[in-house]
Amino acid sequence: MSGSEEVKAVCKFLLGVFMLVICFCLSFQNHKPKCYITDLFVPALNTYTNISSATRANTFIFFDLKLENVMPFNGLRYNNVNLTFSYNYGTGERSALFIPIARHTVPGFYQGMRKTAHKRDVTATRGVPWGDAFAAVSNGSMAVFRVDLATTVRSKQYFWYAKKQRLTVGGIVDVGSTGLKKNNVAIRLR
Image (cartoon, rainbow, N blue to C red):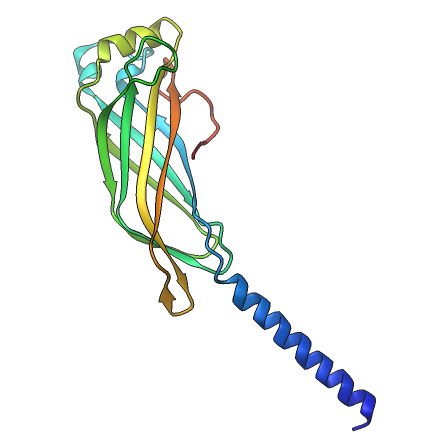
């Protein structure tokens, strides 16, 4: 080998090692997942169906929770995901008086790198003043709900899991006269 070929080979080797070190270091970055409520349906607030005791007795909340792993090199292990649904019982449109009406637990699961998980489920409610909420949506205003999420996540780095990180986020969801959330846009829980 001539001297210039040896220099080229050494440079290529060093460049390859440098790229491996960068990829290895990037794999240790931890980012919490992005959480969204993509759908929320409250059948008891649907004014377009026949108003009967059977409709009001359907006091369930149907929801679609979207969890997005933004890390390109790490998977995530979720512990149980605890959701709390609250109703705005205040007089103002966005008063701070929220009462918890439902709690739901999504069992823990593993989420791969750059994957999105949708958790669709139904939960029963208790203590909601459905008459007041139905009157509000019948008059053209919104029923205001709050969704809070609490869990711990661990990122998988190669063959082991990193330490647990607490994830606590929440968001406000407006529900209209169809019983569905106001817009067709997912609500980011922050």
